[in-house]
Structure formats: structure tokens, C-alpha cells
Amino acid sequence: MPDSTIEAFFETMRSYAAAQHVPIMEEQGIGELLELLQRQQPQRLLELGTAIGYSALRMAKALPDVSIDTIERDEDRHNKALGFIRESGMERRVQAICADALELDIAQLAPFYDAMFIDAAKGQYERFFNKYESLLSPGGIIYCDNMSMHGMAEQPIKEVPRRKRTMIRNIRSFRETMDGHPGFDCELLPVGDGLLVCRKK
Image (cartoon, rainbow, N blue to C red):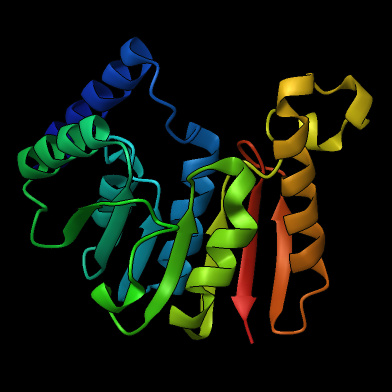
């Protein structure tokens, strides 16, 4: 697609997401993510949490040489993502997989990835990390969105809505784990909804 056409296409995706209440990455956050990825120039990228394919297609547009595998457990969203991927003309570089990322046999995936983007169930990031970290090549980078959760991760837990407290505790635990992880250098960037960037040593 020409640049003017692809921008209109992405605007259509944003409008659909807003109308259907599908969470997609905030513009400031995805802008920063794309800048970081363009510096890194990964060849293979794994995304956990396709939703309707917005971030995967934004990454594919920004990185013409990247191949992306993206996993989504919600069948309706997966099917919508497939439609958008076909419409974008980038189906050769973006493979959408319908599966629960915590149940998928990782032997079905590539043997390694240069980058991973985690934007799935917010309370499960540590489990995602533990399952998929072995597929990240040395020097590879894991990018994790929603590490602030609209500021709730910085609030006293008693001020967090009760139904969200377990999720917030899990996010905090994951942040602490990565902050002290001997195998990764990590930085939490205050962009979008909080972007954690972890480079494998």
C-alpha cells in the first residue's frame, strides 16, 4: 500500500477498535516502540496478544524485513485480525496463530526470535516470560506494554479497585523480577501506558 493508503487503513483499524472496545496500544506508546524496533532491526519477532492485528501490522510496516508470529486466544478477534492482515497485503510476513499463549506448544514456533512484544493478559506477564524467554536470542529484546496500567501500578494497593488488585500485584511482581533479573538489562519507559524494555545479556 502507498503511505497515504496505509495511514487511512490504520485509521480504519483505530476506529474499529474504538467502536468495538478492543484495546489497542496508545499512539505515544506504539510510536516509541516502533522507534526502538527500528533501532534494533529484528528479523524475527513474536507478539503475544494480537487483538485485531493493529500493533503487528504497525510493526510490519515500520520494519520491512521483519517476520512476525502473533498469538491471540480470542477466536473472533483472531478472525478479524486475519481480515485486516489480508487487506494490508502483509500476510507473507505476519502469521496469526489462534491459541492460548500459555497452552501453545512452543515447538510449533520458530527456534528463536530477536524480539518479543508482550501485550496480552496483564496479570500473566511473568508466566509468559517464563514460557517464552528461551526462544529469545542473546542480545534480543522483550518489550512489555501496560506496565503502569493507567497509573494503578504506582498507587497504594488499597486505592486500586478490588477486582484489579491481583492483576496489579502480578504486574508489580513481574516488574520487580525483571528489575533484578541477572540475565536481562531492563528499563521502564514512562511512555504510553508504561513500556518495559528488557535486553537479554
